[in-house]
Image 1 (cartoon, rainbow, N blue to C red):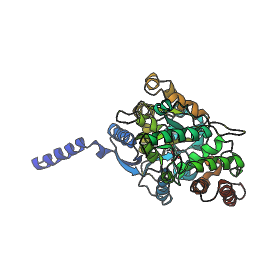
Image 2: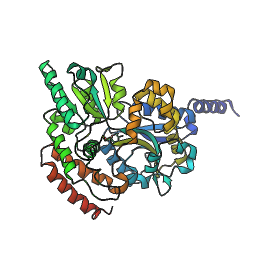
Image 3: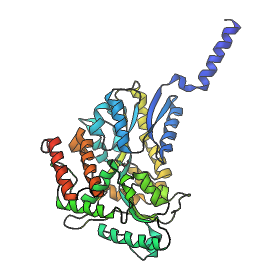
Image 4: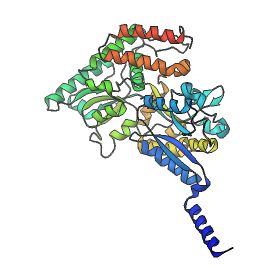
Length: 424
Ligand code: GLC
């Protein structure tokens, strides 16, 4: 072999050594752009380094409803451009037909580590359509320092919350903070409003929109009462701007010290307690308040995210391996420690390191046990239509565009029409 050829070969070898990925494949994965999005990016890169593959991170919009719209476009056109998707707990019925069965890639012991109800929700016709990544339940965040200042208690009912929020707001405004509000939540017309409103309605004993048998239950006096109360907050203890708030907008107001109470998911706790948080050391979290009347209870909507592999991926084996890595025990532990994201692996709640770093998980764990599921299983591929009609009816009510009874009666008609009388 000539010296020239040898040099060329040596150069090639060098390139390959410097870039192990040249032997691997490229996997495109969606990661969120929220405040904890970097954790997903870091994990995907760590997997690439470990396996010699490369990852391409696809930045997802923040709102879950916008993500769904985008992914539906990719998947219905059978595009292989994205291999691995983060999926919301309510999507398997809507998108499941586009995901591979992960069972051949995962052993039973790995599956059995997760909460069985989450696994059940991700299983269809015996196929496991996604692996659980972290779980969520709605919480009431409060400012302990302000409750102390005004000698008030954490509210146990929504009526008490209304009073307490009003008292603190008046006090803080008198003290010179004219941007202070009593209560912030997610009020934009999107999936997050469905989660908030389901909590209000379920806490008044008003059911969960559609019953497990498919019957439409949402048009009832307790549900109307809950929504009318929520409408009374907007413009009084809650800024009008809430009608356009998603999770991060509410957190922005609360974390900058401008709200007494906030409804949000567990992720907000870690951020409120972070070193640079203006409210560090002043925050508590409790179950969301009860409604009143028969059937009143504390209600938290069940949320959470999973990882699924597209049927149109050219590399299902590597994509499934990445899904397993992201949802595995080490990664769930890292996410719990770094960001307070609630694991779906049950044993991690007994892990001493996690218990020490995240005492708050005790509360999350109990809330998860009684959390209210959205009717995504029973409405299947219709769920997004159902939720859209529901959040629009709620948004109209919050905007004082018709009262709750009128808007719920109209909603029932529409839901009856798409389900042919509850036969989904
Ligand atoms: C959280 C929940 C998810 C829910 C979304 C609504 O991300 O985990 O299940 O759909 O909030 O905004």
